[in-house]
Image (cartoon, rainbow, N blue to C red; front, side, top):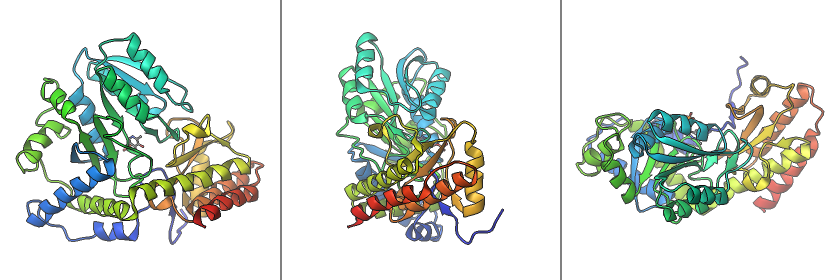
Length: 388
Ligand SMILES: *Cc1c(COP(=O)(O)O)cnc(C)c1O
């Protein structure tokens, strides 16, 4: 492996962290019951709630966002319960496998991994299948680079008497997201995507209705690493941690939340939109094809680019990293595609141009006939217009 002094990490999470975040992660370790840390932990929860736009309880669960997602899904599901799972990519599909293993009666609306499940389809399905108690949805399907319209789906689920569980791991801090305005019950995010923080903490918001459902669910995990009810009882109500939180990760998460709130949440969202617009313009002007079926459903945190069948995504990823010191993401099960992420710090300045240059030139090296210069020009037009 070539030794680059610094690698451009333009991958779809974990992504780059700012110097300020790295400094926060390097702060001294303190005991978790030190009053300083207790204050930090409570402040961080409150800041997370602000970024989630919610009045609901927020938990900082130790472990990758997957831990919080599994805990939330298990807590809300019991054997025989009718659950509608929306699938437009690998994370949605994975949720379905989980739900089945927890004994749910699984209902699914599944579309091709470059499409989005429409709110109309959800409404029609719920009309035709009374008794569904939970709708599970991925807001931003990171491998597909597509979004689902949770702003419409949340109220539809509510009207049909179903709770919602939303995987917003690659959304919060970068994409438009309004937990309370969209009437969403349980929302999970991670720090390592649009927030540009460390992988290691799952942040989850829980509505009053969801707490009631969990409390009345004999299948909800208790005395378990993935138990949300343990966190409620021990920490929210009792002021004691169920186990030792990662002090450094909490410092890192507070720092990234501070950075987003100081920048302004709307401004951070606009920054992701601008980086995505520059990237999409570059991809198409270069002669490459967006993976998403339309720009309307393309996510602003990552741009997925279709590759020709004879060029394997893992080969491309390895080549670009080895020759140019740029770390991109591959398809992660969604298809033969490459992903240019614009998340957190990488959703700013010239990073979209760096990603496009590395991917474009890498594909040329591997024999594709594309116009890299035209792509960079088009991206720079957008970058310049948005910076003016
Ligand atoms: C990153 C991510 C997760 C967390 O999964 P990891 O495998 O730990 O990266 C879950 N859902 C979505 C949509 C994600 O982007």
